[in-house]
Image 1: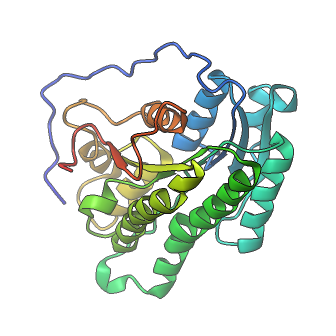
Image 2: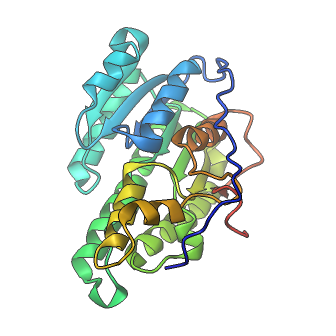
Length: 276
């Protein structure tokens, strides 16, 4: 683990630009809606005029109600990305609730940490099930519906800068996010003739429960406490952690109709940390 960094004192503010109805009439499914980037994405898409199904392993009824509920076109469903039947049901239920679908934001993911020598098969299987297999199945099912209905839509996956650079103690997570980056590129090429665009975002250290989980793990057996490890993962150029709303803004942009020449890309949302 690198030395604890001390910032120069600057801290760029999180800007909250005015939301415009760029998704008016659009219908989206968002996973990972229970918090962090997923919840921020649901919030933003609704403010931008979309109707949204907010999916999470635990049904987020309170979130849907806060955003206006069924009357506003916001619905909550449960989905377990490890379970093929649950994923299939979630895709079908989303189409039913929205009367069709124009896009998918695959935000949900998990991380389980252990040194590489202790990273046994169950850790790989759990992380690939949630981070790779479930999101791909959901995308495949949603896109199949789009093609059948003649919808020119979009899929945005959430990968990670860890899928490009990798970090010690999370080898399966790194590999799972690298897989997301790769299948995004292949799916973009295969689905382009149907008018379907596919991209992914690669966040850096976002202020979410997952990042706190990583910090807690690093602190175990260390003389450095979890709060200090959390600070290590803040962004040097921003002078703070990335805010979930900043990732949500890029996801929203990639779901718009105006993004046609950006295809199969892994867009860094990491405050300048990744060199490619």
